[in-house]
Image (cartoon, rainbow, N blue to C red; front, side, top):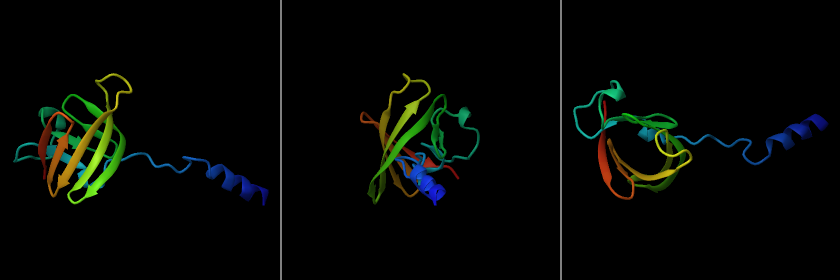
Length: 119
């Protein structure tokens, strides 16, 4: 009985089961502003990037996901917060990602760019 209490108490602390932030599954894959686009090496094109579970892999930059907050369901819209391997350490960058089918628009507060999903 004491062991059961200990296990419940140790697992109930805040954040014990907190999930790591992840990009929404709908966004995973390769994106490019122009078609045709194939799923080749990301490093060979400036504008193409890949979204994985926890990172956006750009041409010369890796963005680590801090948080993803769903803002709207139609079209799917998220507030994405990232940190960059080339920016000041700890600097969080907010973006708005809007996904409409196979078209992803990313806005940073100054500009917006639209990308198509690579097949």
